[in-house]
Every structure is written in C-alpha cells, then in structure tokens.
Image 1: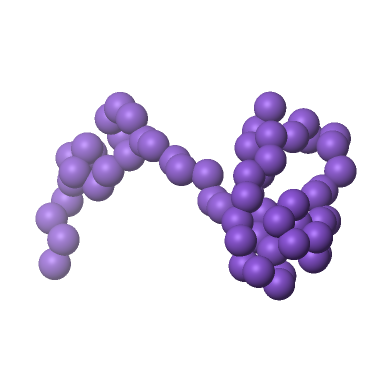
Image 2: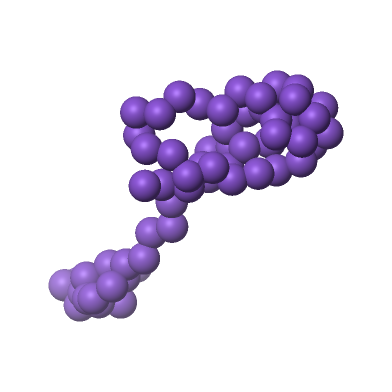
Length: 64
C-alpha cells in the first residue's frame, strides 16, 4: 500500500498516511482538526542500461 503525504491548511503540519488506492482522502488534520490536503510528489525515475543517453549511439554523420 502506498504512503501519501498530507499538509494542514491551518497549522501547516505535514503527516503521512498509509492508504490503499480505493481509500478515501484524509480531509481532517490529526493535530488541530482543520482541513488538510494531499501533497502530490513526482515519482523518481531511474534509467538503467544503455540507450538512454546521447553518447550511447554513434553519430552517422558529423554535425556542422
């Protein structure tokens, strides 16, 4: 199950919640009972192996 990060709109505290994909979004801060919102973070991408970089392929003709 993924861990989601939330931020409170009043006290600005951040907290994490382990939830399934079909679980409801947490809308109440556990610290001050104000409204909270989910923070979306991009997933890291790691490219492994050959073929991902310009220097992996030989040039067919010189560039002017």
